[in-house]
Image (tube, rainbow, N blue to C red; front, side):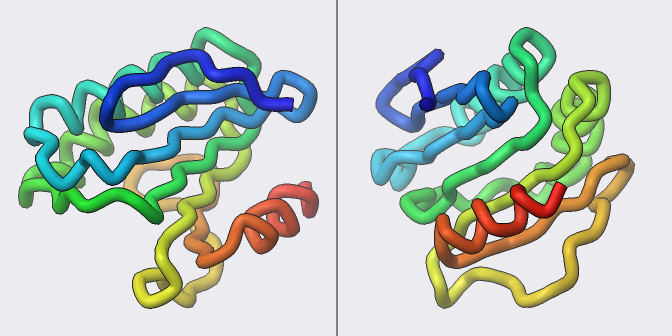
Length: 132
């Protein structure tokens, strides 16, 4: 059972200690989020992974309306991925609107040591996480 750890107008971070699942659910208010606030919540999420037992990370981006700046990928690789690596994350799932979900095999992205996969349903996320 997931417990909310943090909540603001842009998103909620929750944790299910029973399975080591940490989830960030973006809110529709992200249609007016600044890049600084977007990165701040991502950084908080990544740091939380190091503070609570985390095996799996899920980002529910179905209501995410913000489009990151061009430098975001580099910032993410330097500030988020290392936290996930130190936390021992085994898998990262990104839940997206069906029209935006990429159809690709799960694989590590950037400097990550864990695979990332994109899905269009929570059931697909659960099924993938159950595979180990």
